[in-house]
Each structure stands twice: as structure tokens, then as C-alpha cells.
Length: 87
View: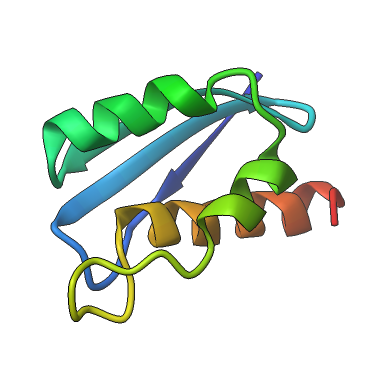
């Protein structure tokens, strides 16, 4: 199992810790942000493929902001996918 720590930009969340194995997300922990929504997202992505979740969440916006916590999570997943050769 590997762990990736990501610092989101433009959102209320401050740190995302992603545990994954191969091409699958094991867990997501987020510091800051909207706790209920982020706990829900963390549960929904467990066991899902990194590339699948990245594609689903890329471009999600929060109000008038150009990004969101899900969009930043997608950016972190993209970095993992590139690093691991999944894309």
C-alpha cells in the first residue's frame, strides 16, 4: 500500500492523504473543508479505480470558485496516475 499527501489550492481543505494499492483507492483523509461532505466522498471512493474517480470529479466547482475539494482530489489522483503509469 502506498500513501500520497496532497496540498489543495483554492479550497477550504488544507491537506489530503490518499492511501492506494495499485490502481485502487484504499482511503482518503482530508483536513479542513466541509467535514460531512468530505467524509461522504471518502466513503464513496473506497475501492474505486483512481482513473475512474479522477475523471468523475475533474472540473467540479464550489460556487463561484474555479475549483472545489472534489476537483482538487481529482488533481491529486491525476498526479498519482502519472507517477504510477496508470494513464
